[in-house]
Amino acid sequence: MTNTVTISCILDTTDPTAALGFEVYIDNQKMFDVEHVQAPQQISLQINDESAEHRLKFVMKNKTAEHTSIDHAGNILSDARLIVSELKFDDMPIDNSIDQLVYEHNANGTGPLVQDKFYGEMGCNGTVTLEFSSPTYLWLLEQM
Image (cartoon, rainbow, N blue to C red):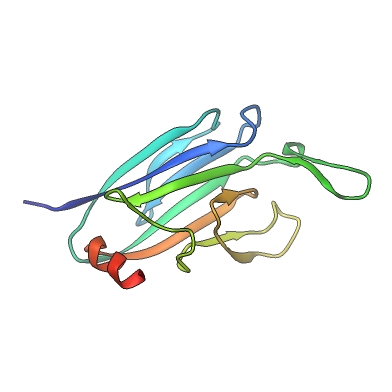
């Protein structure tokens, strides 16, 4: 019998009219793809929980300059963002304070490539990566 683990989260948007897209990859295999996030949705994926190293990636795509309103002084008035919340492995929460959650982006082509800590929101086209190992229960214990 093969053990599996369910990786789940809730995906939402701050602006349902902005055609922001989202993809999920596990070990470089695309597991989820939506071109326009319009409402909250549950994402739930299963992987083999046998001993191995894994990479989970969330990709935000399709953001353009039109999705951000800026005033004459350069202040952001409104900004379309994707929200990833309630990230869990088999109903065990993965806290955004885990240092392995890395958000890599280049401010939609306006800046250098940076790696930021991920706090649950994606405001630029880019990738959030989480490196983890299985069995996931042991990995989670090591992170606490």
